[in-house]
Each structure stands twice: as C-alpha cells, then as structure tokens.
Length: 104
Image 1 (cartoon, rainbow, N blue to C red):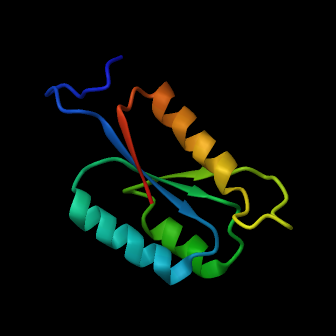
Image 2 (image 1 turned 180 degrees about the vertical axis):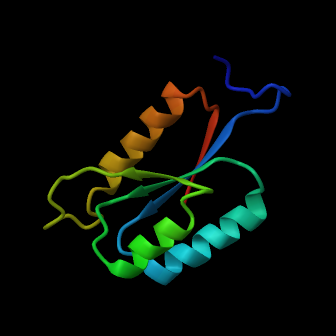
C-alpha cells in the first residue's frame, strides 16, 4: 500500500487526543471537521470517565473512529498516557499506509 490515495494525493490522518475534554472536544471536533473536510479523523481517548466526553464521542461516531488509549495508571504522570497514545497513533497510521499525521 502506498502513502497516497487513488487520486495520487498524500494520505493524511488527523489524530485528536482526549481525556475528559467534554465541551472542548466538541469544539475541537466541530472545527476540525469544518476545516479538514473529508480527511479521516481518529480520537484516541485516554479512558475518559466523564459523561460529557462520552456523549460528545457518541455524537460524532459516524464521522470519527474512536480508539481507546492505554490502560496504564496516570497517577504521577504529568501528561497521563499521552506518550504511549502517540505511539499508538503512529502504529495505527503506519499499519494503514498513511503518509502524514496531524496530531491535535
């Protein structure tokens, strides 16, 4: 598989990282979809447990792919499991032949 789609355009994947982001996630997804058209979007959610974030993710389930992030303990980590989730995003993109990642 090449890094380009059938038209020869580079394959770009948008990755949004989330943990209990709620309304901010809603604004981020809305803006990203508006600005980036039909580019594929995945949200790597770091085990959010608030109802607002869960509701936002559900409301966009037809447009995005949700991936559960690492299950590792966040206590004592400044950025939770972000670094592991970045590795997860990179592996996802490589496995599917994406050429570029835009991480938000």
